[in-house]
Image (cartoon, rainbow, N blue to C red; front, top):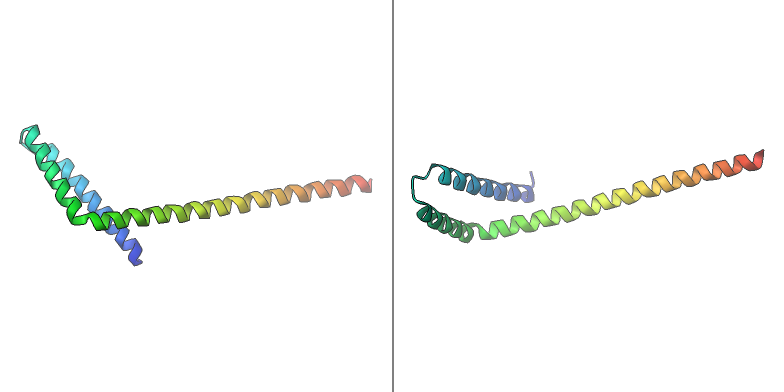
Length: 102
């Protein structure tokens, strides 16, 4: 596993942990709504301060991976279209030759 993959895995793990913790906390908290919301806001702010660089880096890497994937898909699509056009042109030429041979 590359460093890039492990960084993304780490960031995804953090996000999954945060989401799971928040959901569990909200579901099982015996506190009033206002107090729960205040604690949730504090926890969010603490996590953003603590893990902001990692989250930013993971976002950047995800965008780069999406961009690279998009370019690869576009390249493959263009090659596929070129092959189809070449096959159609070859068939048309074969039909043309057959007509003139008759």
